[in-house]
Image 1 (cartoon, helix red, strand yellow):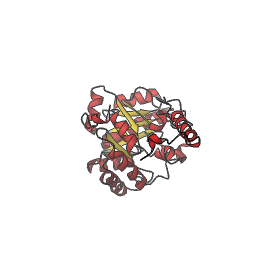
Image 2: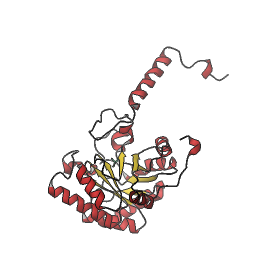
Image 3: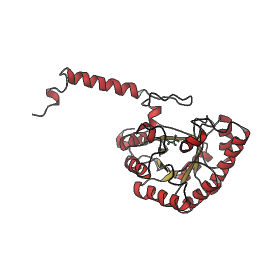
Image 4: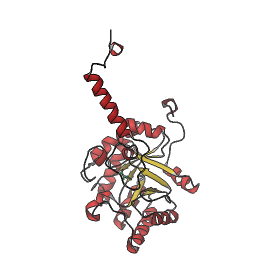
Length: 275
Ligand code: KIV
């Protein structure tokens, strides 16, 4: 799609996503963290753009998502929002911005929507306390996406990046958490690193759409980290990932050509010079 076609199609809404599930249409989601990539991702027809706190890894080179601040998320969300005409923009609430109290969660999620122009926030976990927070946020008009399975902000408690819900107790808990988040008003739930049969079961039990990452084909949609699927993050090769391009190699090769051309006096030439 050329930039002339930007904004084609109706804006994606939380209700629209639920209708997509009801019609059996699959939802395509990707992350973005800046204006130009957000434009590309939106122009290509992605339904949901997540300003994920995975920016800790792929933008900032950090080991975990824990150090990211609310101001960091708002800064990136504003840039993304400027590049998006159609997709629903969802912003990750960072670690400890929503866990301390419902009041703090309300204030912080309100800041995200007011200061970035994004459409919704995402929070991790499905305990009773989390469901209370989700209910308060949705009642205040702040749409919330849930996130179950491997929840990166709990990486220390979970003992690493592991598939969750492998035993009976874990399966039961995840299904209960998903139902609780739906009852609290969440409009969608990300399922990360979840066995395929469990993700399918949860997806069938819920009326709201599930968005999988490392959760198989039974979810209502799929999300990937943009830099991973474009092949820019060359060290990251989990089983669930398909690289749709090898931009890392392409970018490095372009930079090598540039360095050589500058060193050899092949660039710039008269053609690139003002008279
Ligand atoms: O931070 C993120 O990008 C995410 C996705 C992996 C779902 O939470």
